[in-house]
Image 1 (cartoon, one colour):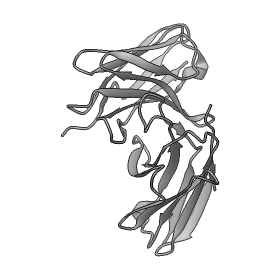
Image 2 (cartoon, chains in turn yellow, orange):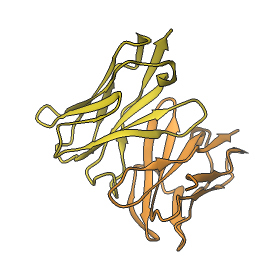
Image 3 (cartoon, chains in turn yellow, brown):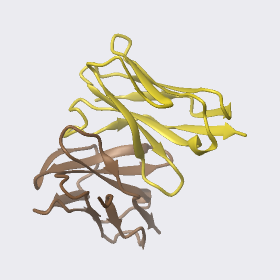
Image 4 (cartoon, chains in turn cyan, red):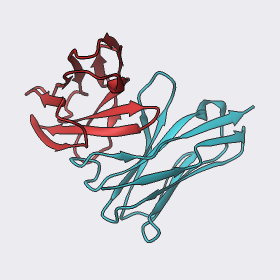
Length: 114
Length: 111
């Protein structure tokens, strides 16, 4: 089955700096790659996703890049703010996020230092 | 639209008991998935339902089961609870072509 590796497990950056979280996946048939943000006491919140026919997608301060050949994808957050502090999860799916479910990475605890 | 609603939020059960968790998806969403979240194993896929049919199941024992009703609401059941079943159980719903929206989860503690 699919295996998703996520690095780093903890990332501390100064407010205003950029943060990058990287994931690799094992199943070349995976075609959907979402990123979730989870705050304490809440469920994961979808912040951005990308499909395998696209190499990059951007939404304001957040961007995701996908390299299908190398089987890795990354989350980029620019101009970080205190409210960006949370645990971030990457995931992969073969079915566009449908019947096969999502395989998640272990998460990255992002800490924004004031 | 209201979000994904999971009840109850917290639950304490004794080993050997069974438990039923409930999930109301976002109105109009026909696909519902369940995930188990633990500190050690992270987020793991349990099962996925669409139009009352289970389309896929993760690598969990048969003690874990679920169902979906005609109004898309879903329940999951865990029988013969073990200490290792203590976790946050998350339900998520989606409409076709879009990503999953998660609920806040049910925190199950088995003592």
